[in-house]
Image (tube, rainbow over all chains, first blue to last red; front, side, top):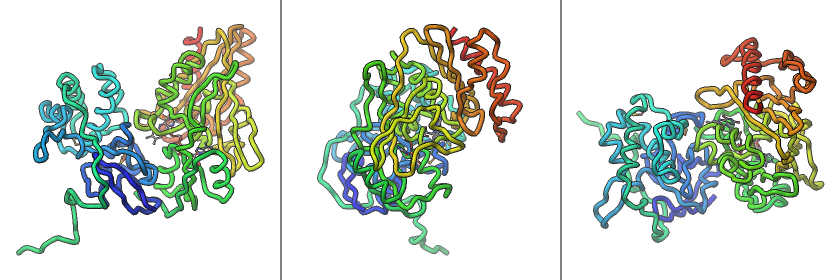
Length: 189
Length: 267
Ligand SMILES: Cc1cc2nc3c(=O)[nH]c(=O)nc-3n(C[C@H](O)[C@H](O)[C@H](O)COP(=O)(O)OP(=O)(O)OC[C@H]3O[C@@H](n4cnc5c(N)ncnc54)[C@H](O)[C@@H]3O)c2cc1C
Ligand code: FES
Ligand code: FES
């Protein structure tokens, strides 16, 4: 079926299978591989993106269900301040400042969940942050520095929301390289 | 993980959804029970009828002395609704502890009731609230009392071609109510969930999720409590589940503990 989705401000028309999950559409068709898949049971939150501004698990949503919607992924969080430069989102800076990641696998989902929290609750308590992260699993950090990173962002959030202005419709194009493209491995000696 | 192939159909109205369901397939609401089960190959419908955009299924309103919750209302919509907080506060309390924020952003009350997971939270709450589930099928609409709705594990009185459209909850002046659960620590599903509604005249209604394979009103305990006795017969008329989270003995113990907590909360 054909869907039209505005991803990180760019409207895209794409052909997907009816059973395509949003996360596979983002990763495999748009090559936005910042959104991760960490489980088969909708429990890890590594795949969290925003659909119409709301944090959802993109592994538990069909691409067809996002038809006509605006999707923001981790790649859309940095704030474009000129055609060639961008600034990290305060949450991204917070994770960097507070050592909020180790392997980084959970980080995109953590940031998308935290961004939804801060939108509704700009000054969350530590307990509220931990409660909001209920559906995001981190195997490395023990969560403590993730909480600190979100607190850091809450006190440094003066910047506007990520760029969501509409741009012309484009067909599928690959902005980012896939993390592993086995078909193109070059043999070395 | 990708599901088996199926055909995706989107319904724009209740009548269109009913017509599409008559061709076969399953309704898709929030997808937060159905899609995980399809990924794990526990479920493989030929077609999904997406009811997630049907405006008629959304919204929460008062109708006389009933609170009417559209089947497509998400757990998050219900938790944050001022009407729910005011008139059926147990629903807001319970909805706010389902899963995690992303699950509450998508999962719906209608989907949860139709799915009838023995560990889901809504069943105990709708049973104790004495709610009615309104469904629409090819031959029109009918109302099913919550007490007649859950028939066994993952089984309900709903026919395959029927759609839940709304949940009607009686608003009782002066009633106190609570939902208390012992959560599975990862998913937050109820290992034991206990809903208690205490009417203004002091009479209680008690219902459990998670305890037995079918959620139930514990009428034996209600009789004891409503005749001034202490509750010694918790879950006496049902077979209590035993699984890797909790043995039968432990679940029974938890049911007693969570009933006490609930009774304290409405005292
Ligand atoms: C990680 C995770 C944690 C969770 N934790 C909890 C928890 O703590 N407590 C809890 O109670 N639940 C929990 N859930 C389940 C969640 O609440 C689901 O959203 C809910 O059970 C199903 O609602 P849905 O709208 O997503 O339904 P769907 O998945 O879309 O549908 C479920 C079933 O209901 C049918 N259906 C859907 N809508 C209708 C309708 N209007 N009429 C007739 N049939 C319909 C479908 O055909 C399907 O068979 C959790 C889920 C996940 C993924
Ligand atoms: S990949 Fe979506 S929750 Fe784990
Ligand atoms: S940083 Fe490794 S999973 Fe969180």
